[in-house]
Length: 311
Ligand SMILES: *Cc1c(COP(=O)(O)O)cnc(C)c1O
Image 1 (tube, rainbow, N blue to C red):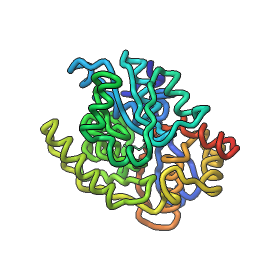
Image 2 (cartoon, rainbow, N blue to C red):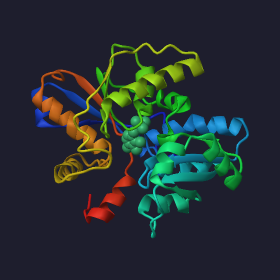
Image 3 (cartoon, protein in one colour):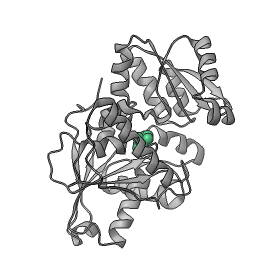
């Protein structure tokens, strides 16, 4: 069911004059090719959650997300592929017709439970609300919003495992920080890990990542040795899922030049930010950098629909 084997994800070198001038080698790790719907990091984050759910005997997965969530789309597709029923608790009122993300989730059999924004933000993990959900749907294995828990971190420790090129720095996009936590956990401090948050609020995220590293370390009795990591917080473009013409043009040009499609929420902002940092600072000169293409391309459909653009 996977498009490329998760253990041999291709690495693609990017050619750019400004990289050559600074003696930088830049490689894109093509996790986006893992699966068309369960793409990139969402597959990594679900893998051990699904194993755990199966092992303790659950038949349903329940998780959370906004109406454009890649995690919702991925959970629905993974549930279908691995024989689980799925329930998606969706932030905000139902709007019909469903957008591309929710339609895809629905087509993969996910039951959608729309809840108000206030219920979503304050109640979603509360015992009373969970009891109501259980009454409505029966027992379920619960995956947190964005999929990030200790099992997700474990899955993401496998991202950098089979890399055959030499590198100094790994860059990834961040939402809830699970992916970056896994990458950090899998490397020692000789490798620098840089995260580019797609949301405002870098301090909060730093705390979240620190918490996830501790949770992972405790759950699997492993030491996390790498403290060589940092967030670069200047490239959220106004916040989650906020885009502008400059970003859209960047993603289009990137595709023309490198034949790789980026998503507007995460990897577009990541590459835009990294290119900007490379051009306007010396910190990357002479370095070998791996950028993780975490996928998320299903999300572009929603932007194309809403903005009347073609990526
Ligand atoms: C969800 C997502 C991320 C963020 O992953 P976190 O583990 O939540 O930080 C990054 N890139 C893409 C394409 C995503 O879909």
